[in-house]
Image (cartoon, rainbow, N blue to C red; front, top):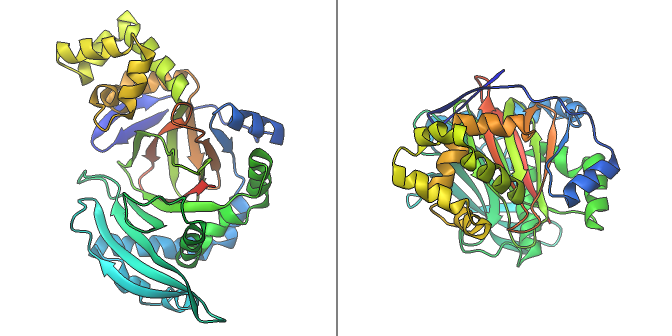
Length: 355
């Protein structure tokens, strides 16, 4: 049994999902085209040994950022500064006071060391909390460019590429994804061309942390590759149509009404959710709204719904060395996913969008 707890909400004990075997290339391609999550168990185990010192250093950086709520001072020291200066200038840093979850954003320009030409400007690495919960020490380091929240990150492949190179410099263990021949072969077969890894995020999911149900659809991106480098995470994941099927089935089942009332205590809320589940278009549109608390309460905070998703086969338990592929075809068919930290220590993970 596995105990699911996230941001102060205790979802109780759920059954350990059946450990998946390594899928064939044909199975991977079929699953991707069918908008299904794909687990590649222990694909990365040998790479973890090769990059063990980098993973250890990444944990030290995470602890330093947690301790000081700063990022720049550590990037201006070894082992980072010398590597950064090979192709990047540190331009500035912002304390991100406008963002309650933001810690610090460090800006960079990239240059060609042979010709001394500026290749890309406005690149950045941002350290952020993953939630507002006081007992969740989860962090993420995101690499991108331009004005956050307004940028069209697909509009400039060159800046995307250099933001990825910046991630490589600060977190060399990124090569566990970007240089993995098996991952590259599978994605090349699926996409019909060599993949690029963009909009990179390095996660440190801490106890009581994780991510609520969401998707990662973004223009120009085909999906996401997730690699568990240390620690352990538990996933609930399903394409949007299948998740909607399970929401509707759960809400319309009479013996689940008490469970629904436990997270939506007002009768008007229960009635509103039931009405949403009578029309798929209404439910689909509501799920994409910024405020979708009726559905959020069910899929993120209801223990009975979590157990239902596990029983229906939508659960995955990732250990260090496992990789996971998340197709994100479009807003109607993308894989929604929810993540829980398992264990009593933070774990490092890579989450790279595929272009």
